[in-house]
Image 1 (spheres, rainbow, N blue to C red):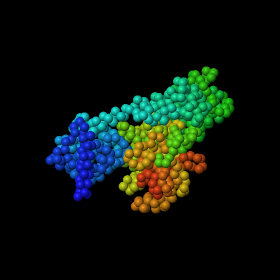
Image 2 (cartoon, rainbow, N blue to C red):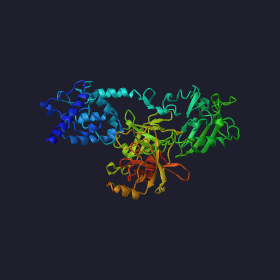
Image 3 (tube, rainbow, N blue to C red):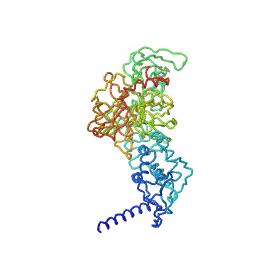
Image 4 (spheres, helix red, strand yellow):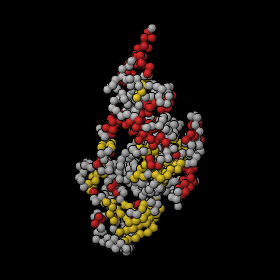
Length: 608
């Protein structure tokens, strides 16, 4: 008898709790449960909806798909977990639950999502359906739904309005940037410009309006920027200072120009007394090139004439950047330098000495440290979801599973030169894509075999200090077990849909693992590894790539010239950083010929 009473009390308590939440979620029109009609409203027992805190407790079934079994409905909803993980829309779970397990209102009728909730879910998440080979449960026409703040009429109106208001407000640990977004407060006055209007680096540490803040409580004069002398502790004042005006690709050519921070524009580098044997080589090397092809010194007052400047040995690059260069050469002569350089050095960041700041178990990377990592973004909101690797002016390498079945090229945005994912510094470039080529034998059903793809940029990019290509490995490259490599990305710090992607590139060193040993570990999970897969990580776990790192690079160093090459493309794993379950990468060495053949077929070959 005592047990029966206890169970009865539990049942009554559970019913009271569900009724409380139902009333709380519908405070404007509380549901009054009529016992005689209770069969029309049944308790919502779909764990997907409960896990994502959907705030109604009763549903009407069968749904529009004639489904009544809540366990089966839960299985259907679980298929959308990849969309939830990408975080295309915070209210997506509410939208999905209102379709599969519609809310029961006070008149015991099923109510559907509000029009505004539907439109926002479709607008933000439609792109990712094809990426993950998903589809809505039925054809969605948002116009057929009502829009009403009355939660007894439709679901999600108030929640959507609240979400929009929250997007306009920064939390206590955020800083309002460009009037449209928030950045972490610890990015303010750290010496790196993250806002387009530079507001995050103004009024720092009592710097005056004519000074530049280096970080670490150091202010310098604006005319000390790009003057050939490193005044900031980490030398950031001498970064992104030179360019060739015409083009900066594998071959660079054009007028040599230097950045002037005072006038906020590019200025001519004076060609007076230019020593082409010394200074041209220095300029090309600073720009990332090995070889000087041609030097011409031109009198800008006579644009049709060119003449070579007098030969005078110069032992440093100070004359590239002398103060007052915005007024031309010191003696008033208007001589400019036109260079042609070739053999851009892949796999080498611009020289920018700086200690690292503090992926799972990784450390934060400094801006410009990994200039070949790019971010793949989808949909009108440009939502980040995968990494990519710049291998030339025209091509980005990534994982085929990041492409999925998405064929709508207009929905893609590639962001290059990015270190802080939510920042918009001047170094960032955006590109659309004009073609996506997945490996012809990619098979998502076979644990992502041949998980590799190429993205052809709609418009070529120019290389600079924040944007450089990584090297491809030689087909003869052998990666010995225990070789230490580095995986980089903005991936989640832990496995799970609730975890957020990192704002800043993180890096972690991982050793190559013998393929046979790795295959043996995965056999315990009834998983077989293809020979084209590469394993890297630790037996004890703890350090690994994770969700969001997909498509990014596993980088190893060439011992001959100390350049980085992409050894692997982040592909898959079981959770993240688990013991005896290291990260699995597509072995790029096995696909070098495929990369060469595809890029050559498009008329923009990587080699040659």
